[in-house]
Image (cartoon, helix red, strand yellow):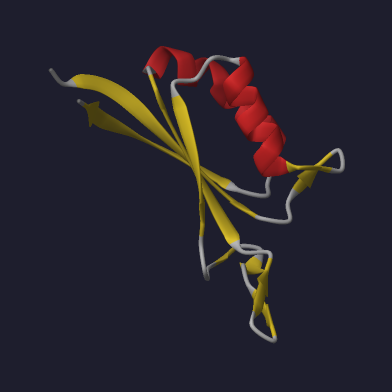
Length: 103
């Protein structure tokens, strides 16, 4: 049985902070606190955006890689969280939304 849900994709950088805390951790803590069905953090190997390149290579070590946080839940729940998410990432990231069929 297919269910129509939302997928919210948040694009940030690994070193992004909010109040000296890791932005990815703050976002995941918010999702857990709000009872979101699931979220995954994906690490990218390269990228660019309005803040420039998302990578720095130092002798085989990559720093400040792009991160993608993919969140899936009911539209009603995620719509309610969007203002908080946008407030946390401010102008440091990008949020996209699309419908998904969940089995």
